[in-house]
Image (tube, rainbow over all chains, first blue to last red; front, side):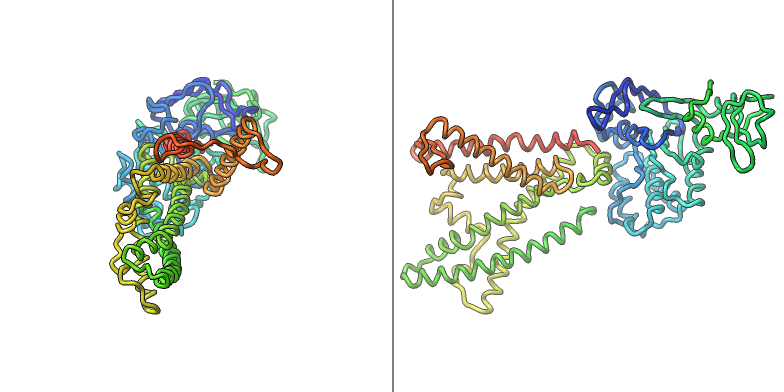
Length: 273
Length: 271
C-alpha cells in the first residue's frame, strides 16, 4: 500500500531531511508516527500524499505515484493538517460541495460522527472554535472511507472529552482495508489506539514495531525503587518513584507506555525485539 | 461558486460602481465632442457615433478591459496564496486539468464575456442618469452592444477590422497580458499580481535593453541618441511592416507557451 524506497528529500539543496529513506506499509494498521520536532513527520505525510516532490528514490502509494495527484488517488487519501483550512461555509454546504467529490463518502456516517462530536449542520465552519474545526475535519476524513488516512497532530486543540470521543470514533470507524497514520508528539492521546509504532529521527526510521510484539517482550512498570530490579532497559524518575521498561517476566503483559518507549528510543536505550 | 460566491459578488458590485463613474465621465467628455461637431457643422449620425465610439467609448473600454483582465487573471488560483489553502485545494479529488480549466473559464472566458455586457449595460445606466441633468443625442439612445464592433468594422478602423494586422496584434497583445498574468498567478504564492507585474516590468526592460544593445552594435548613435532604438522599418506587404510582424510573432508566440506553463505550474505545485 505504501512503498517508499530510498528517497532523499530536503527543503534546501544543502541539507537533506531524508536521505535513502525507506518505509513499507501494508493496509490495515493504525500507525503512530512519532518523532521529535523537526524530525520530518509532517513532511513525510506530505510526501505520501503527493504534496512534495522527492529528489531521488521511488514512492508508490495505493499503486500510484502520489505526485501525479490523480483524482482516483486523491479520493482514496485524506490528510488532516494540524491547522486545517475550512472555507466560510456552513457544515451542510461544505458536505454538499466537498462530500460529493469523494467516491466512497458516507453521509450517514458523517451525520453520526457530527452528533458524536456535538456539531450541527447549521454551524458556520469559520465561526466555530479551532477544536470544533478539528473535530469536523476528522469526522469528514473518516466519512470519506478513504484507504489511507493521514492525521497530523489530530488531538491538538481538542479538549479532554473530545480526545476520548476521537479515540472511540477512530477505533469504530476504521475498517480492515484502511490504513491510518497518526503523526503526533502527544503520544498519550493515541496510546490505546495505535497498533504499530514508527519512530523517526535524523531522517531515518529508528524504531518500527507492532505494539503487541512490544508488550510481548517488555513490561512498562511504575516502581518505587529500581535498586532490586534486574535488566532495566530504561527508566525515568517521577514523583512516585520510577517508570521502567523491563523484559517480560512470567508471561505478564502490561499496557504499553508509549511516552516512556519514545523517550527510551530517543535516548538510544537498548530495546531489541 | 459556493466557496467564492461572496467574493465574486462584491467584486462585481465594485466593478459596476467603477464602470458607472467611467461611463458617466465618458458622457461628460462626449458632450464636449458633440459641441465641437456642432460648432464645425459636421453633424451626422455617422460622425456622432464614430466620434462617441472612437474618443469616448473605446479608449476607456479597452484600458479598463486590460486592467480588468490583468486583475482577474492575475488573481486566479486564490487557493494557492497560502500553505493551508494550497493543501486543501491540491488534495481535492479533481484532476489538475479540471482545476486549471475551472479557473480559466471563470477568470478569463467568463470575465471577458461579462465585461462586454457589463460595460455596455452600465453605459446605458449612466446614460439614463446623465439624461436627468442634460439631453444627449438620440442616436446614442439606441446604441446597442454590438455597435462598437459593427460601426468599427463597417468603416474599416484599425482595431476591429479583421483585414488589418493591427487587429491580430491587438488580440495577441491581449492574450499575452492575459496568459502572463494567469501563469504568474499559478507560479507565485503571495501577492501574485504584484509579483507578476514586477516580473513583467523586469522582462520588458530586459527586452528593451537587448534591443538597445543590438541597435548600438549595428547602427551608429549620435551624442543624444543613447536610448534611441534605430531599427529599420520596411513594408513586407502592402499594409504590413516588419515591426507589425515582429510584435505579432512576439506576443502570440509567447502566449502559446504561457497557457501550458500555467498548467504545469499548477501540476508541479508543492506545499
